[in-house]
Image 1 (cartoon, rainbow, N blue to C red):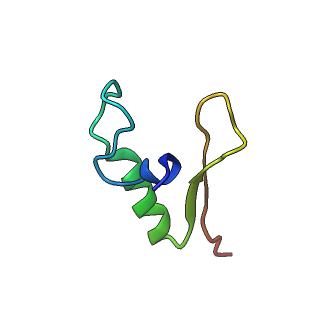
Image 2: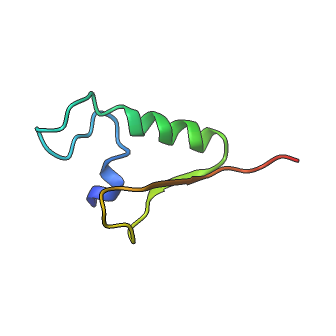
Length: 59
């Protein structure tokens, strides 16, 4: 599994120098998907990380 998909897994840290529990992005993913949306990392952004998401809009 590539790094851009792994960051959304529970307790996942890409290296040992990262602080935190590794739960934040997995919680975001669960929430967005529960609303019927999607979340991903923008692969074109190169100055760090840009997280994108969509969700249905009920009018």
